Length: 239
Image 1 (cartoon, rainbow, N blue to C red):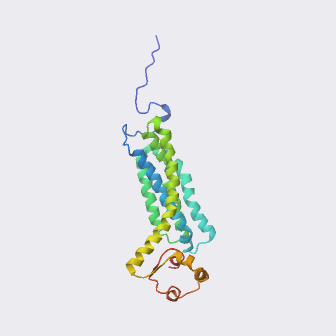
Image 2: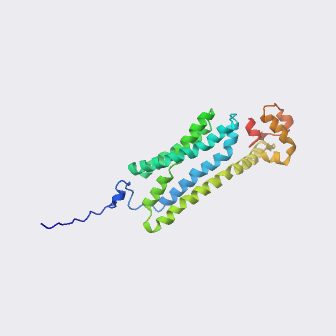
């Protein structure tokens, strides 16, 4: 008899290479891709805010230099190992559940870092935070899922821009935040607030701060007469 070839039924996964890909909505929201770009930006914004403060945070727990380096490296180590894991998991269970769970875990890790009692706990929290932030492959996969083929190359170039901007903007927020806090405290208390700028204006006080960091007690009222509060380094490190 004659051999008859039957056409493959049309469907969302006609390509055999994508049989295991998650089936997203056929008509995604036009805000889907921009919101995912915002997720990357917020992820790296949080990372950038924390990075300039980590050395002072570690010093407040009397950490050794190698321990500070370990805390720094914990985040990228977690991200490195989690990227393929989350990507594979999102192929099986879908992009949205993985994105929601990783974002929630990332936020909880930043909250837990503020209450870490030891260097070891801080390292574990940073490692878990890096793993939770390793959802870049999931985000790129989702963008590819919801973007038409003719616009896909342009859409996939934007996560890298959001990644870089998040780190740059996040690293600068800490400086702006402490200066704004200084102004707010001075208006609230009606007294001057000690800031890092005071050290730059009076280099003669640097040896006193160095001695205080080494454990030499000092009289705060005599050292900072009339000061009602203090923010930023070096006064905050001695709190």
